Length: 90
Image 1 (cartoon, rainbow, N blue to C red):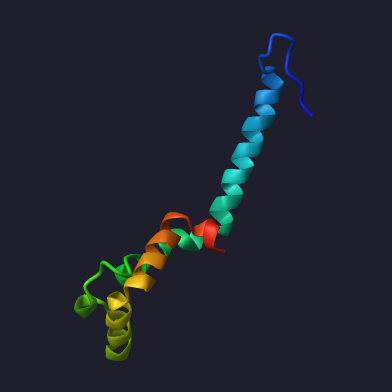
Image 2: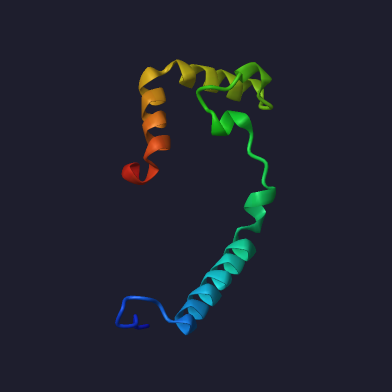
């Protein structure tokens, strides 16, 4: 474990190690998740209860199901809570 100097400051060599580690993490994230940056997600997926169903690029059966779901107030409430705190509902 890296040590702090007696006055509580961080040694330059430790900063270099931290910076290198953060740079490596950044490069790893870019390599592993590069597809996410190029991925196009439809509005009806992101804004499930706030999108215009008729303008959504989906088939009629899915439009009907989405319309039914949008009328379900309990589902709407659960979805909005999940969006706000997704880790809580896993």
